[in-house]
Length: 267
Image (cartoon, rainbow, N blue to C red; front, side):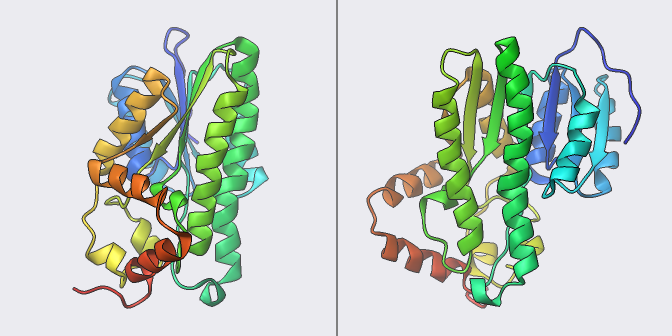
């Protein structure tokens, strides 16, 4: 963690999974808007990101922690301390390909704990403080993957289905409190998620057009600022999300199989 002095006049934003991809772009948007930042990831690269963001003239604290564990979330919470969080970007997440029975169970559970357990623990702490103050904004990174059974991505899609549903429920629970909850639901995005999730040989990784993480982050950032409940990034993903609501689950699972089955890449 790097020591910095936060300004009393600048609002504080917290961004998880900020070492790369969508999280990095969300942190850049916050810095450009004059937020002081607490950024977190499980990689040492988060310190490099902090150095970059400080060039915007804001204070940045970097936390290297395993956000799949309550201990790791506790490290982040300790750095936040009693400071009011204006905006929380609960973005940390993992993906994992292959059929469920072929996955390493430890990795599958770690992904589930990162995507769900750690996210819930952080939101529970920060959200309670926001509600007590009567103001605050939360953005949860879900996915359009949460709308379909994810053959060969079964656990990942399940975690995103949980987050999508949870965000809608929490938003309703917080009506009238001054705290807003938004859910960003991107489709395939040009990040390191495919390499890290052992999905390089899939059609989804090689053949499907990817969204620019900067554009995805901008979509989510604007949704948070407006207090919108949910936003799907990209017109093609909006179409997929709409079709998922009227397509039988077995057909959706077969569609995902063609994209995510190991060796399915055409190129």
